Length: 303
Image (cartoon, rainbow, N blue to C red; front, side):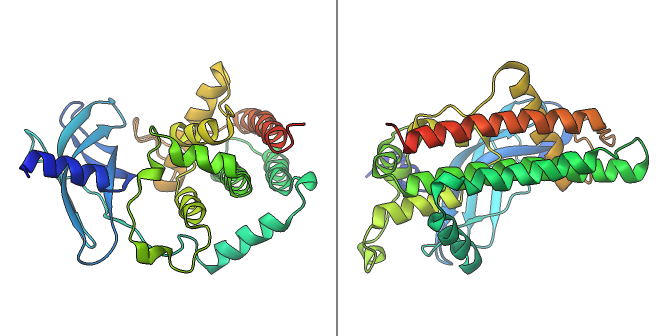
């Protein structure tokens, strides 16, 4: 077998996950966050040496290169720029349940709730209500700005939890949704490689592997999450026009609040988050989540 064919087979068989990378962008000449997809390693002896693409979050330029990764290390070298140091962590996978015992107990509790009470929506509604209540006292002073950053981050986190719980619960209870997700060529979930020994003792192996995959998804990745809802449930979750722009901006600001102590990664200045901004974002998220929740309810009860 030729090297090129062997390389293509290894790329197809590998499981890939989105990851952040930090590097000096040769295009916009600055230290930036970047995004890439890295092959998952599952044990100490596992390793990959495969081509990758790294995108700059500031100028959106993509750079081709190679990743050499194993359980402990992840080295990326860009084609034509071997001198650039790229910081990324190996993606360590597991053949066991992705969720720990606490997460599993929580998931089982969610499954036991009666759907008519909509506990997932109620949890989001309660959180956003608390956010709006705390936001009434926001001003321009330093302490208020710290609170504003916390409230914005909590709002986006609440959205991510709602999306995750809604999708995982609905897919877990619907075999047609499971089949659509596993058969989708665009998503590629059903192409995951496994050993027959992994299926021993598991009555519905495909369903369990699918749910493991969904548990591991980063639900702030709107593009990926939107595809999962669209393919699995036939639901469009994204708002339109200015609301979509507002949501994408809020996710970006939330990243800066959580990972950069509120510093804008593009300007180097501290984000100024007003009371009006938090209130408008809260109202938009409530409208978005209510629309998604209604669609999920219709999907579960089509008649």
